[in-house]
Image (cartoon, rainbow, N blue to C red; front, top):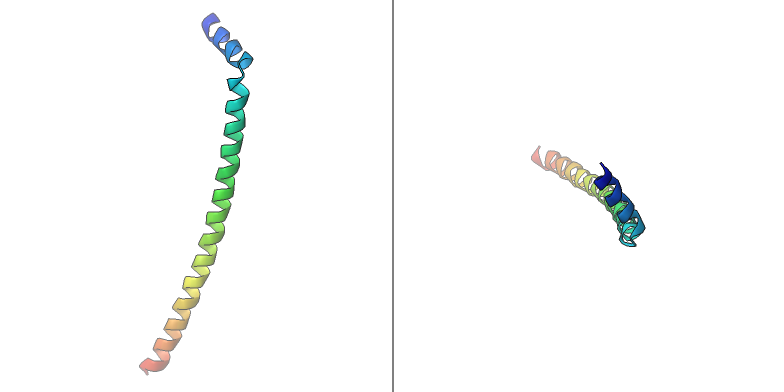
Length: 65
């Protein structure tokens, strides 16, 4: 147990700890932005495909009869 506590104290005293935390925060923010962009792009794409599908169905039913 003492070994673990010593390692944690050493980690907190090093300068690498805050740097790792900063990188983790930046990575989390990048992931959030990517998820938001993919969600928006997915919704827009879905709307576009639905519009095209509806137009093709309407054109097919008009020309088929």
